[in-house]
Length: 66
Image (cartoon, rainbow, N blue to C red; front, side, top):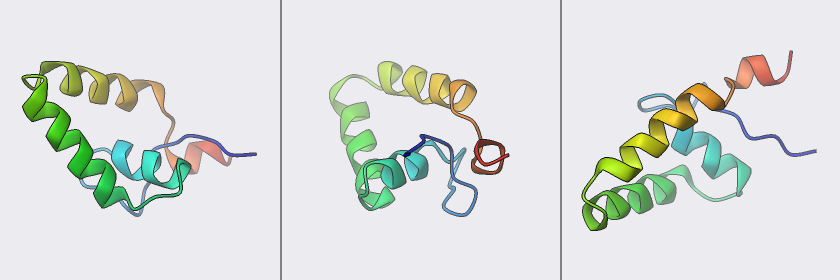
């Protein structure tokens, strides 16, 4: 069963993009680039709000396996 969580080992800020990359089985760098493009297109605020929601909603990788 696949679970969505924030990564511990592939973390730049809080691990949200790394977790999304592992969940969808793609390189986390691609997720980060897509987030950057979305920030430029949507004037930053929606992506930043979504990222912070992900920080508080998604558990850490270590908490997900406990």
